[in-house]
Image (cartoon, each protein chain N blue to C red):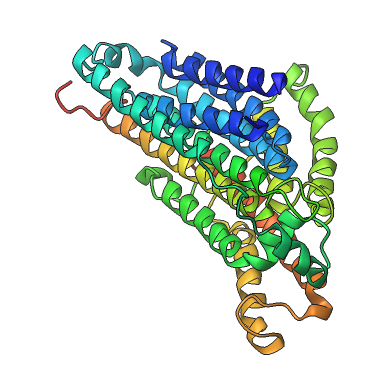
Length: 102
Length: 311
């Protein structure tokens, strides 16, 4: 088992954990956090693929690495937008969940 | 190997904390720690460029947004806490997520040998771009269209955020005004750190052509310095309706797109650079793009307008 495989298994666990949090937490901020954990796991999987593709004197394949940098920036933009939507929901309704029966 | 296993276990432990913590604020702290540990994992995976982005953006700036939200939403939590889903649903979710994790783990274990890679192609063409950092070469040359679209995505996110402005504050100033305390620790830290941080940000941006770094990492650090100065009350955000502000925001994508179109005349197509001037053109794109990304990130953190300029 190589170093990259260790992080690959770690990323698999992270995706599962994040998915669990996304399903069971009613509060939207916790869902945003969980979604970011899934993102962290997916990006890490890209990192593992990049590391396994080390060649030509590079420590890893630069193409998936560049994709992850792009992904991190977009993930941040989505998180900021989601948080702004949540804060507006709280301003309008006083709630931080999507349940209508509360 | 032992270090990697320990680090992976620590990352999973912090992730469990982020999901399981009762208090949302504690969960967000867990998430920030998670991001920093993940940055270490990126260093171990020989991706220092990603590590820088993860530490600055994934952990730092995202953490600021989430911490701000968790303190503002604190009053709402007690009423929401008693609506946890039942034991059946939780058990079903646990089974589903275990299956997903097991599937992914199985895929990781059967990845092909030798691994497919584009590294040799990236290395072969790097001389043509005049760049020494393969990741920057991918971002600015081979996959420049991704980066161009990404700068547009950032702008769209900001537009979405601004469109959530309550009616009375349309075009006003983002976020709350922080008042400075001349003797405060935060003011002192901001006065000390911001000038150094700006230099570090510019340096990280500039060395990105040959070493780990680049426009996203540099722009994040520049944005973070503005956030720090704003939190200490040393600077205030301008009203979002200011024309010069809008110009800074669109300058990066506009220059990127213009030079991309010029590729039709100068080279073989959209976003193609003539080999003799590749590096010059890339720097000409990177400078306004860095400025635009830094401004966009800072305004995304500041949030939608919440007050009008005082006359």
